[in-house]
Length: 587
Image (cartoon, rainbow, N blue to C red; front, side, top):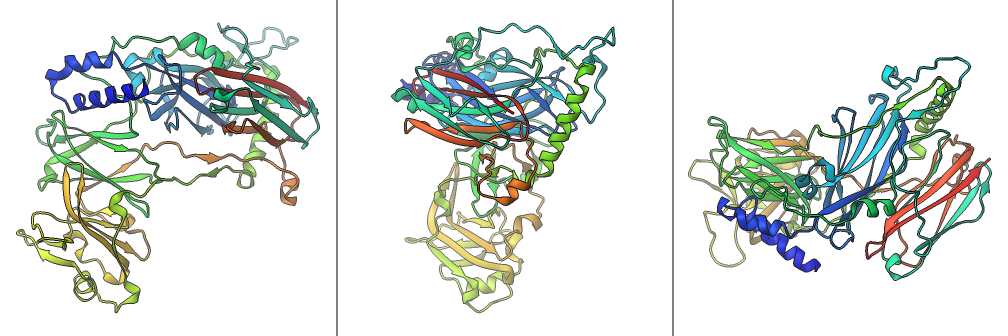
């Protein structure tokens, strides 16, 4: 079934975006057979203060098979305010249908009611009603509280706690004890005491599932209720028809990875430019490079199926008359319509609590350096164009002033020739046969693609560390190159200092980085023993691994007494929801 869906989607890709209008009827019929998707988002908390992290795990499931999706490889999480205005949008890379991220709540966000949205690009075709939606309330003690969120107390003798708009929710979370069993070594703990959590999977399907676990202090007043995976399946995972998809203008699922897209228009006529080649390069040691052509509507799409660490990309129109065109990148929505946000009230009785928690958050953030999460470096296989057969370390040879002199005196099978317009260009001789003068090599400097070789010819050769190249022809998208040539500079920051008018720099809307989340310990470091500990979040593990059948997690309580709640959410390999809650106290 999964392979049939992938085959169907590949055929839809062939007919869409870059397809002719005459195929729209066929495309529309095929789109009806593509399963809908639904997204579930688990969060660590639904009431947050400035200075805290909103942490989340997103699961994307097919409605037909009720399993984690093999369709979309990218999902989106957004936070919007009462008017649908965007606070943030995150792009999440899905691994077997799941991914995670976080958002630090800054002091610039005012106290208010917000809505957390989760969706895939494919889900955008069915409107915001199809998105996952959950309420998030934010309290910012560093700004005046809007009057609409203040609870008016008619009598000073009354003590009114936080008041929420009534919420209609499904029944209480159903623990799936037969699937996953969660046990604690005891139910009551002291401050900074060791706590052992044991999680056992009940069957093979559960072992192969995807889960997240959160341990956090409960608030002493009502907060927005969070939906469980069990409730999500009952309420939303009930199939659906794709008859509402507009085959003329459709958001296709990001089937093979992240899509970076835009439009090329003629500057003078403002009309879309068809069949114009454009490149994108992500500079750096682990650089990536793509080439695409625009369709009849001027649209281009680059597909990134691997992780990357770059934050900026360089786009270049490969046509000789590049200056008559303009590149306009596609952007994420900045406003969402039709979103209903529940209000809440803050009472005078909460003043002391808000002050106390704000002080605790400030202290925690003051020691963030010794409690920070660590970013997992982007990992991917080097693409074929980064596999070189010849390498020259110029420190092993006599140094020359110019690049031309260096190539003539040091480098074999590489030369510089004059083009008809008088510009100089690099030339790599092929392994066999004669050089095709119509083809130029693909040239990079510190990972930045150099379309016009003349722009680099006068660069000082004494700043170059090495020259490496391969001699075989390379076909990338619609473009053919005679070999690949890479110059690596000594300082490695060529991209930061290089300027040419035909390069358009773009800040990437890149997926959230993966992290190893901080876990407090008190038996290994005297430094940690002396650091204040006002953590309300004792554990956030978005990638709980039960493949071995069981997992033992060791955490430590903090200096904050109260009732804490452990919540485990996720889905088995066959799509069965798992929701488990446990509570314990810290005194």
